[in-house]
Length: 268
Ligand code: LIP
Image 1 (cartoon, rainbow, N blue to C red):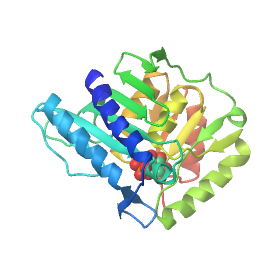
Image 2: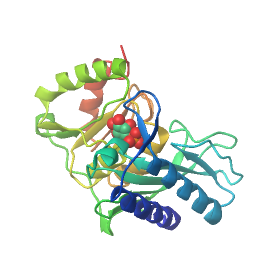
Image 3: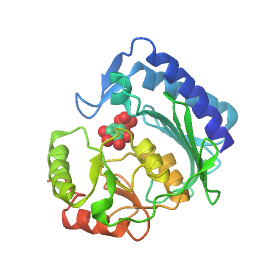
Image 4: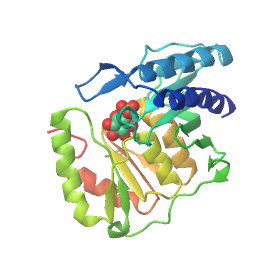
């Protein structure tokens, strides 16, 4: 956890300071709306450099760069700015996400097979630091976190997010429209790492999203899990790109059932 926090703090300070100046778009990915800022690239370069110094035998998977293999079996899975669109627009919900995972020998980090060992999600705008270690609990600025008690679905505040490609967004709109009358309300924060940490700290009762990449998911999933949440996929699968659902045991199952019945893990 110490290494994760150290490098997340350094990248977070770079990202925070960069927001005071001009934020420029350096490119796009899956669609014109899926932007990369120059600061995404600078933050990931800092994370890569510092992790290579501190943990030279470990591998690294980052949102903006190539997969860097290691020899230790431990991989660092980093999102240099999770919530890039919020960062671009000057909205506060963005984070640096750093996780250490162990993958089966000879495999790359994959949510279907990895074990997350440690995670840090740092919100540069207000300095909040979410930390978790496997079996060691989760904290926000040193305060122990616990998810909310399960509520009836109609009493649940549910977080979610949407992809960048129109075909997927069309189906996501159908799924959220069917859910909205059944819950207290919906929140779309714009950063999966912060969604999962907000759930861990009681700011959401449930969270689901289709399309999370390993770097969106890694650190926040451990924070949520160590705060007492179940973090899962649909149809018996683990959380991952097809679907991620998180919430207290005894309530998350109802959301899983709705999402399965709605084919929320499909794009058609
Ligand atoms: C973001 C995710 C968020 C999702 C956004 C975006 P990024 O990651 O954290 O949950 O809804 O569309 O993918 O692209 O800002 O690193």
